[in-house]
Length: 272
Image (tube, helix red, strand yellow):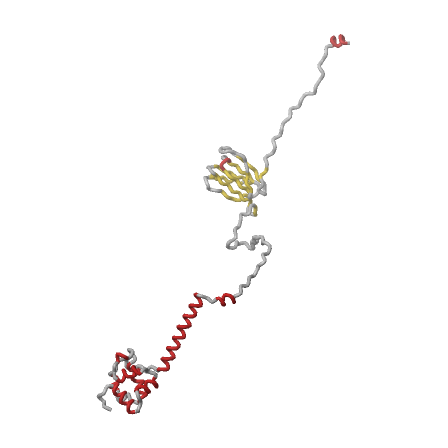
């Protein structure tokens, strides 16, 4: 073999030396006859890009061509150096696997878009009936401990150890005075400014403009019946209940006993 010949010619000469035809070699390598002829004639345009050196190495191994002895000719081939030859069996398996995956993907997509009637008929829908029990009346939980729990609304206790809860709200200015025992508290009520406090024991509430004030004592609305500009005073017991005012006493004038009119003695004698 001449060292000046191209690598494709070297492959052809090595094949002829082994007594192999192109048809038999292509069949053993599972290559097309057109592709094998393109390798031997170095018509690399007919070879897929990047497959020149792998296919040439595969043919060289089959025909017994020493690559080390013809290293310079092999390096003149297009393609990357040191690329491993593609195994035809592996390539065929990869193509088969890709085909199976493609067909399976199409079948799954078609099944999702157009489900079969048989699948619908086989699906049995089990209807379950739930018996509705009696309505449960919500009962608020009692507060345990000195601190409230998040979400609970704690109403103010009308009467506790601190005293009686008094709430005053005015629609106009008013002077309010609360007297409990020996202590007196005075506050000037203004519009939409409530006055809320606790008072110990019995007390007396006095308002100089009671008609503009809403009064709530121990959780009860107090109706005083006064008009705007009229004063009002009310007394409350230790439980926060309004003590009604005492009824006024009606004084009776004593009347003299009835006496018979005096008759003259002369008139009496005449009648007799």
